[in-house]
Image 1 (tube, helix red, strand yellow):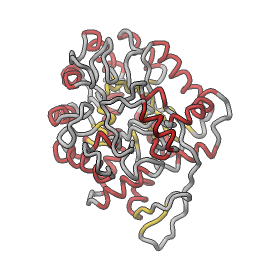
Image 2 (cartoon, helix red, strand yellow):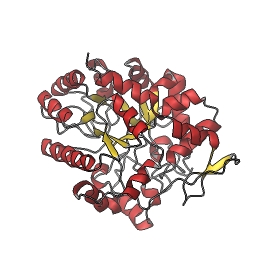
Image 3 (spheres, helix red, strand yellow):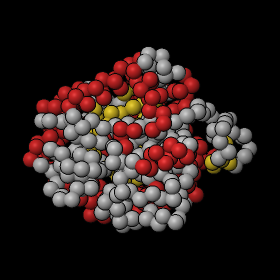
Length: 388
């Protein structure tokens, strides 16, 4: 999803710390958050707490009215407190890719420097994800894993810049956002020219150093060009299926099939207008699972994951004035879905529990749920990051 003013530029914070409420042992369903009446099955709670959970597009703090909070956390020592950290840990997610954006080289240098300083200040609470083993370290040590991703490759001016940003921690990159840059065409371009000659050389260097190529916002031609060029698995961090909703940000069955052949994984987004094109209908967790079903039946459940495209919460939980401000910046390419940004129940800190509860209700096996929650991302990223 994007804005006329890029969605990345208006990320903010979610309010209110949450903590686990101890479930009653004998009840079939339990409350997980003290200040939420939502209840989830024992099986769903156990699966979330015992699985590796990775959200490959999660913008950490996101609401536009709380951007100042994110700035304080990133720039001021001691501003990020234990209750703040627990709020993230209580979501059930072990690691995220923050999916911020850097449109210029200078932007990229500043972006990763800020995040490196932030993580270094809280080594007992946070861990930078540099290799697949760091996902295990995050889960076992009880730290929150943060992987560096970019939703725009504009900061990469040449193949040698790939080495610079890999050294700074970047592990996943989209060549372009919705528009066109020096590397490739995005989903909203009028003339789809695919990957440029420079973009092809950058992909080759990304393969060499072990940086993932993400085609989430790519145009159709760019998707296929990347899949032709890359010698490593290709990822689609957050998207939905065109077979269920004809939207420029969706992936065709052919693209999904070829991505799976590369060894890649597609993350399903929770964004309402990318899931269903019926503004009069509420979008729910079942609509998300319909997209997961489609990918699983098309190419196998080992090729589907989670890329929520949110933060700890969405603007659905913001005051009405903030919601209106947010929607005023949305590109016309994104239709407002009944004034909702995310599927109902997937708009806040309990979204992974709600999704898992829905998967249980829909008859998914524990093995498939664990794959979707994080094992598939682990496998594909390990293949990308392991030097040959």
